[in-house]
Length: 475
View 1 (tube, rainbow, N blue to C red):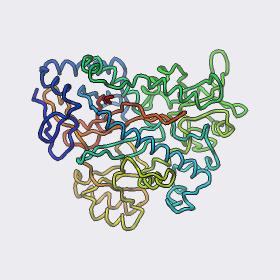
View 2 (cartoon, rainbow, N blue to C red):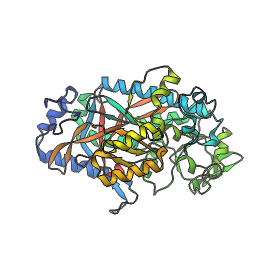
View 3 (cartoon, rainbow, N blue to C red):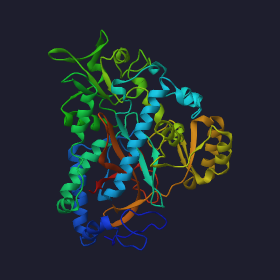
View 4 (tube, helix red, strand yellow):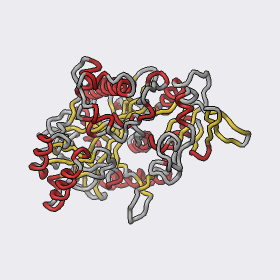
């Protein structure tokens, strides 16, 4: 196996300085890798792959000709983040979630931010994710975004930027937890001596947060899943099992007298809190999408009556719309009177004539995204696309400008990765930390690092061929 080094100039490498010296926090791990035989590393990677299969760590890729079920490939070389860097991310994420929660409460109630002309009202109320049935609603404990997965990237300047906020049903935390168990077994001595902060108590913290949403001393909690064919079903069942709560689907639940009940072999049992992994509009066919076969008729009435708590609250999706993202720095200043700790990626709103003109002229140098698409779909990476694709997206933007934003192409940082068991090469990564909001806002000291396994690719999404790495946050 080739000697490990920073093989991608012009990008920030998480392990190596520009002069090819190991960064301080990677020193011990890097030297271990460099002194380990190719055979040993190949064996460790093979063992990790086998462990993933044994644990059932798979996900479904819709429209995939090679078969739906796949492993989210786990590369055994971890991403390591020193404690002082993590503290900045932690403070920035807490600030961001605090502001977004205040924003959600405001737009569904007093709407002061519109009256003060900080953000265009039409942008919000015209969004398909702004749920009119939620107007006038305050969720239990005043918390809208209980579980957040915020995507961050590090540019060539070494600074972290927020790429997007995920406040609906953020996924991937089970892969973070299971990956940690696998990598701990691969490098037990290094893990113990480097002072890696644990993430194993996530399920306990998640359960405590869900219990906090109910006023009952021992609330009954369930994880609401769309079912076994959902791409993240492994995660739904894993988290329910880890918390010791029920895994339920819409067919298991019914509503009577504005209370939600689970059907059991002993009869009906009332449920007090649902960690829902179903999109907003599919939750209740009576309140939202009448064609939904996944939801529970009457659930929203039970929610409004205060008889059940839902995490995340219905209506949160509007806050992670990619067009709203551009206004988050203003949202932070407005509600908290603070400067944002974490930067946004500069964003052009195609709905604005000046921005749109710039995007159409410079599309070859920009990343264009649909405001409501996810998983790497509905996206154009200008520098990687040909003239035909550029022209296709120009027409899409001109036909529906409100549906698109554009951003400069970031030079995503790299982490050395084992490629085909033959060499170690840098691959581009992003970072998804998880934030829980219960009694307080807490950032889990770890994250899902997603890695673009294809050489030169900047698309890290699992549905687009990406993999993952364990993320070691040091004390």
